[in-house]
Image (cartoon, rainbow, N blue to C red; front, side, top):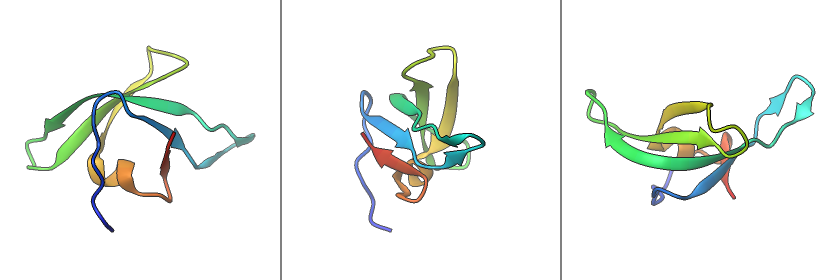
Length: 70
């Protein structure tokens, strides 16, 4: 898979279908960091609910079968 450039402020949509159909949750990249395993991670926050945050590897965020750039 080709590497893409992930930067703070970029928006991504979850492409997985939820229990009740497509939710199309939009996530905003807050920051990037290097984990203790040496991989680069993106800390993302839900655009519609700022209390929802998670950290994903840049490789997962770049996977088009999981996320789509908004």
